[in-house]
Length: 217
Image (cartoon, rainbow, N blue to C red; front, side, top):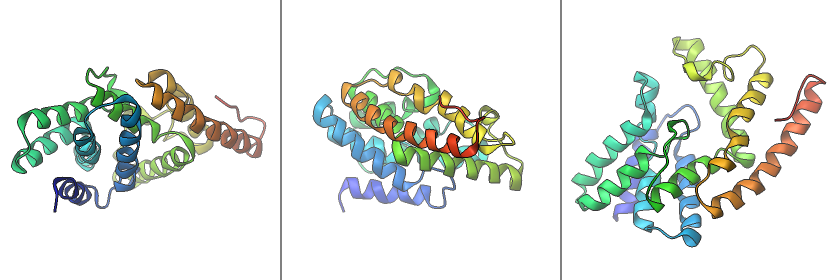
């Protein structure tokens, strides 16, 4: 088994049972987006493969302990890749991508691979799949608080409001519709604009059906 497949298997073992939207289907989509953007923007495909596959392996630890899953994921990735015999230069490049990928981290990546991973991860919050992930994640986080008392403090205005549709609209304002201006690459911006068309149509229908109080970001 080659390095990429070993890494894919390793990541899947960490994300088994992930209750929100950072599961292996998300990882596979981010991997595919990284390689698609790489065709236009350049970058090292090996670094992108590894960074995409490992970028969320710390997310369950974040659920359990709090903290930042990007930092946990970089730590786990470094140990795994080191044991797999990957060169230190590649390990450093991969972990740098992972440390800087998170939407809420506010990082401005300096390498082309890190810029691409950040863009690919953000693009997966857009379009039809972005809507699906948002609803799935909001439901999972509401259930997590209900069953364990654990809540994500930064999500109070979106996830935990009494009216989930109101929360969904607020989420759209602060995240998906702000993504294009925060993307690093031209290729990603083109993909984003197409995906936002789907989201606008969906929100128009949702708020029309929900009643006159609904509004579109």
